Length: 273
Image 1 (spheres, rainbow, N blue to C red):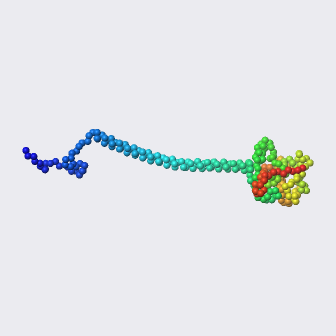
Image 2: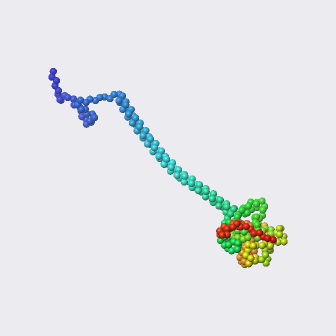
Image 3: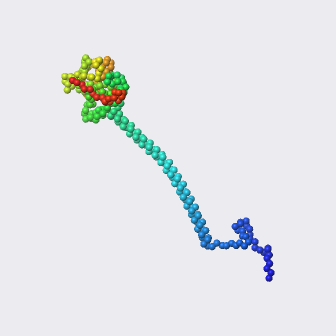
């Protein structure tokens, strides 16, 4: 039997434009085994898991970064508020300390005028003590009538007839004492000196004598003050306007701070008999 081949009857593969589906003469399609299919599916599954894990990690990282930035933004204002609060507290404490010192312990004053020359001069800078006044504020509750004042104390006080004006004078006669001024001589009468104590004032300029004609008893709650400048018109004091109410006293001069050349602690003179 003659074997004839009819070209029209040969099988010609269909060309659909996809080269992967085009077979060359002599090629055949070999089907995949079940193991190969499962391996490929597992490989694809691993890739998908890795992709999902990567996406999740990136999302967590982004969320963490946003949270850190938010926390940082919240922390800065809180930190600033805390520092500002501490500054306010320290400022309040400082102001309170200054007020306590100034009202109950010490205060500074400049001398204005010449009523205390030759001992104290214009623009001398004095530190005055308020401790006797603070102490009296307590003891008067138990019946004490007078502030603890010593003869010779240099007092800073409000002028009784014009309380906004401060004076500086020396205490010479204390409550209950009789003081006389005659012919330039000051004499104090009290229980210790019933015959009179003539004050020897080494701090005044000897070329001047104390003017005035005084004979009076100092009342409780008062003190008799005189300036060291005994020249005519040198001091306006108790000889003219009367006894000083102790309630007007601001403090006791204890330290001359300026000028530096005259820096000294202030002590009371000793009045000889």
